[in-house]
Image (tube, rainbow over all chains, first blue to last red; front, top):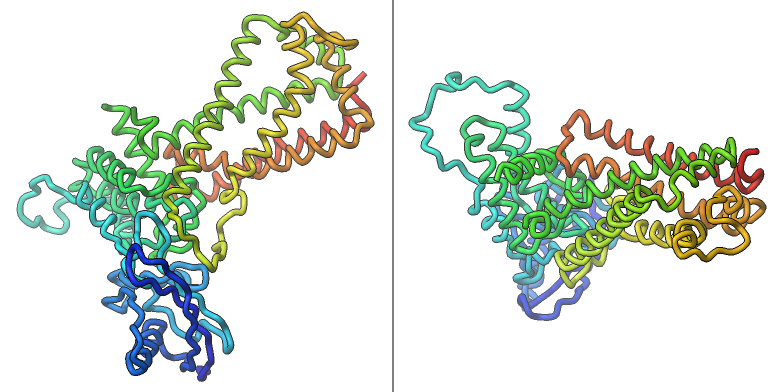
Length: 250
Length: 224
């Protein structure tokens, strides 16, 4: 049964990208049925009433689709719940009297803009480098006109579940974006329309990822374990295959 | 050059050099097994290798393999530290399903290198190097069996140091083997768990036998 609990929030506050940040502590009394982001909204209302600066954090859809709510809660990207984004996290996950540490993503690829908000445009740049189909595929065909094996369709769909939130790079001790890139390469390489440009795409997206300063994957699987969409590291093996095949053909 | 400039290229070099070193470990293990049963047979192998051109070429290739693996590990680690950024998380938690070894490969590798230096000072320096230099002590450079008895029989310090070395190697291989396969792209949803299991078996067979043989040398010395 949900009840009111008292928690202590340790929140990272940073005025700007170059400013020095520090933790600030806020005591909260909150009902366990409240979502984590609603709890931050309530805290912000309180801060505004007290004439203080509200905490800046990213959020949008609040239903686990957009991947905007990038918070590192108690040592986990998106908090302690598995297979869920921060907006799907509820206060019933926490105990009465608990201290909750909230930090922004820590990765050179995601510089802090302010407080808990980071700049994740690096992922957009990787997508712009090749995460699309540019061949002319004509008008919309009948759904059954191009037979695709169920296995491939399922794998492509699983990879396409990636919302590009950045939790993979945030969780990785190497700051690697390989899970994200592999999911985007896989979802297209597995389907006939995307297969045509698979080699060029793998090379371009990996080159952009390296250029933007993301780290090297060492297969710790932390990305997979913390991914709110449960993207598998088997996609990384597929990306490696696609990339190596493309390079050996050059 | 994509093997130097690309993150996947660098990982490919790490995986191939790592698999090559695992193959060498298997070869070395076979030699050690021979020594358990017969010191004389072991010395025949030592004599066969000796300072012949093929043994020298093999040693150089092996040294190059170790060097490449270590240098690339260093480069990757430095790049990864930079990619992590200057600010570190205040609260950290190892997610369920993440192996401890996978997050400590560099430190484990350093322990393996230290063990390797100790091992080379015990055997390679007294055998191949001494033979090449033409300078040696009381034990002949080709008498590997005598060196084993000298360094292990009744010597608890060396035995413990070698066991620590093999334990570090075990952790390193449990992650290193399947990670190398994953980097080569030979993995999928079905084989992911299988490769991880095979990796543990490979590490346990290699390092377990090395440990058992070291203890046998401590208790009995080489085989009669």
